[in-house]
Each structure stands twice: as structure tokens, then as C-alpha cells.
Amino acid sequence: MAQAKEPSFRQSVDLMFNRAVALMDLPPGLEEKIRVCNATYIVRFGVRLRGRIQTFVGYRSVHSEHMEPVKGGIRYAMGVNQDEVEALAALMTYKCALVEAPFGGSKGGLCMDPRQYDEHELEMITRRFAYELAKRDLIHPSQNVPAPDMGTSEREMAWIADQYSRMNTTDINARACVTGKPLHGGGIAGRVEATGRGVQYALREYFRHPEDVARSGLSGTLEGKRVIVQGLGNVGYHAAKFLSEEDGAKIIAIIERDGALVDEGGLDVEAVRHWLSTHGGVSGYPNAMHVPEGEKLLEHECDILIPAALEGVINLGNAERIKAPLIIEAANGPLTAGADEILRQKGAVIIPDMYANAGGVTVSYFEWVKNLSHIRFGRLQRRQEEARHQLLVDELERLSADSGIGWSLSPGFKQKYLRGADELELVRSGLDDTMRAAYQSMREVWHGREDVEDLRVAAYMVSIDRVAKSYQAKGL
Image (tube, helix red, strand yellow):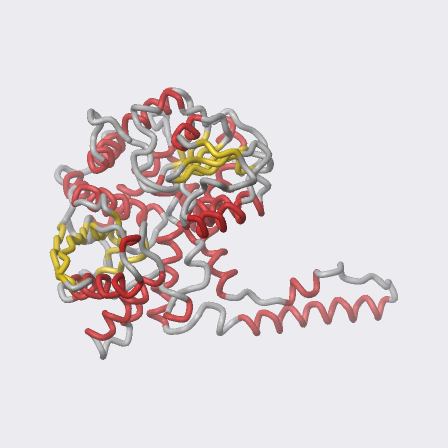
């Protein structure tokens, strides 16, 4: 873990914010308005479990209401505290601004270990927490919209949505009070994979620019690149799966709580995931070398390092030994401010968290819009697209027959071309477009100003500028 002399996660976020605003020309007072957290609500509530009342401590922090609703996940973890929740809420503000999702930043958490409770107990705890937040409008379709985070999933989101609906029986938009719901409970296709998919799209966009890739000392494409993933949860799993199956990258190591698996030839991500879900850890996995001190693998030679679990895993204690020339922050705050500085001085390129893991909030935005519009994407236009494409194919085939040329369409082309886009394809298209546009806005600052040395400062500058303009438009 990070050394005691290092700043806290919240202080790290503030330090990185300060690096960016020092290069900007904000009106007096506006910098402070953007930086500080608007409000944090702390709730202590009791639930009768196992014959006695257990008291839980929960948080919901609202960082910025320059746009509403505010948006941010709810995590269940023993380490949840006010500082962490406020830091994550601030990151959400900047993240939403960067990808142009029309939300302010928020975050929530419950200080508990979800593995210590069965499903029924978790439902009782979640519903009570949702009740405490909803009655204060800290869950509301137009004011505060949570989503899954560490320790929560679509299951918990379905319970929250149902609890809100029970409390607001006449609200036609009740399902929009939370995102990341199951598909049959008001969710959207592609939401579960969204953050991992966003990591893949972020890397693809980075590798589209040879001069950017050269800054990290790499070359070529993602094909054959050696990747180390720390944390095979939802984000790490999907990122590793897509990069290996679709882009030809080699996942040479996976780091988990009980050690790491290493195979220079490339790990089977699906097989490791299955073993992990069955056995609760990677220990004993038969098809790779197991290293008990998993965190040492962060320092292993590779092309791309993907920290996808907790904040502060790369810190002053190990930053000097990190060899990866390219680090993409799939988790929130995996690098401390001190580690960030060391790695930049070593020449590493860091694709920052507020961009790299923005896939989740982007697709959450699509889900929220779907809930408010009460229609799934593609329902109106899909068959019309297919009919128009059919007209073109029929005309081409008629021309071929009439002219006697005798050519035919390539095998499989007709079937692929005629198929209209469904919701999943539209969601992936929207996410890809969002990740490309956000990278371009960062890149413009990164390359366009000599005093901007890295992508993180560029990302903060783009985000802060957009938040500032929102406040100014309000008359502040």
C-alpha cells in the first residue's frame, strides 16, 4: 500500500487539479468553486440481521451541480470513507465534463464487506440505504442518479430502482433514478461491459496516432503487445477479454488478491475468470505460474499495464520499479500523485482514469436517456435501415443481371449489409465515438501547448474549462 508520507486520495486529486489550473486563466473565486465538494451526506442506519440490529455507515457526496442530475457509483467496501467518496465525486465531475455527459459529479458508498452477507441480507441493507438516500432526493431521476461500483452490480441497482419506485408510485420516470440495471429491469445492452470496453476503445484511439505511441517508446498496433492486468473484476475482465480476443494483445499476467498468474505466451482470460469465480482466487490455477506476491508483478516488464482495481496501488513505494512504458488507469486513482510524477519523469505515458474508465458513465448516460424516452434504441429505425439497404442490393443485382457482367456480391456481405443496427451495436458505436472525441480534445491540449507535458493535465484542463463555462453560463 501507499506510504504514510504520501497525500491521501482526495489530496492527490486536488494536487492534480492544481497542476492544471495553474496553467489556466480562471476568474478569481471560480477555481475554488469548481474544486470544493458541495455537500456530503453521512447516514447511519440499522437493519435487523441474524437476530440483532446491525448499524451501517453510508455516504453520498455531491461534488458539483453545474449540471443536474449529478452522477456517480455506489460502492460497498470496508475502506469506504468520506475522503475517498469526495475524491471519487470530484473525479466524476471532471470525467462527465470530459466525455460531455450532461451530469455533475457525485459518489456514494457503504462501509461494509458484501461477501459477509447472503443475498437476502444484502437486499435488506441495500433497500434501507436506498430509502435513506431517496427520501432526501439523493436518489432521483432529475437530481442524483447512482450506478454500480466496486462491490455492487446490476442486482443492487435493480433493488434500488424498485425501492425508489415503491416510494414514488406516480413517477413515470422512476426507472431513470439509477443506471446499470439488468436488461429486463430497465437497463441497456452493453452496460455491464461498458467500462472495460471503454478501456479498449481508449487504447485503440491512442494507437491510431503513431506520434503518441512513440512518446511511450512503443510502435505499431495493439497486436502482440504484452499486457498486465491488475484486478480481474468487471472492468479488468472485460478489458483483458476484448484486448486479447479482438485486438491480438497478449495478457501475460493477471494480478489478484491471492497472488498473480504469469504466462509469457498469453493467458486464457475466460478460463482464468471461470477459475476465479469458482474458487474465489487464482491460487491453484493449473495452466500458468502462480506468484504468491502478486503486487510484484506490477513491476514486471510489459508493454501496457492496466491497474483495474483499487486506488493507490502504484505509489512512492514501487513507482521507481515500474517498467511499463504505457499505463492506462482502468481503476479510479490507481496512481498516487507522487507515483505519477516519478513515472512521468521516467518517460512513461499515463492514460488517465477520468478518460480511460469513462465508458461506464457514458453508457449510463445512454441508459438514462433510454429510461426517459421509454423506448429502446433501434426500435424505430432498424427495419427501415434494412429496407433501404435491401433496395440498394436489389438494384445492384438487377444491374448485374441486365448488363450480363455476371459479378456477384462477396460471401457474407449481403447478410452483414442488410442487417440493421440493434441496441448493443448502437451503444458500442456511441461509446466508441465518445472515447474518440474525448481523446481528441485531450490531445489538442497535449500537443497544442508546450507547457502541457502529459495527458492527465490535458484532461483536467479540458474538463475544468467545460465546468467553468457551465458556471459562467449560469451567471456565476
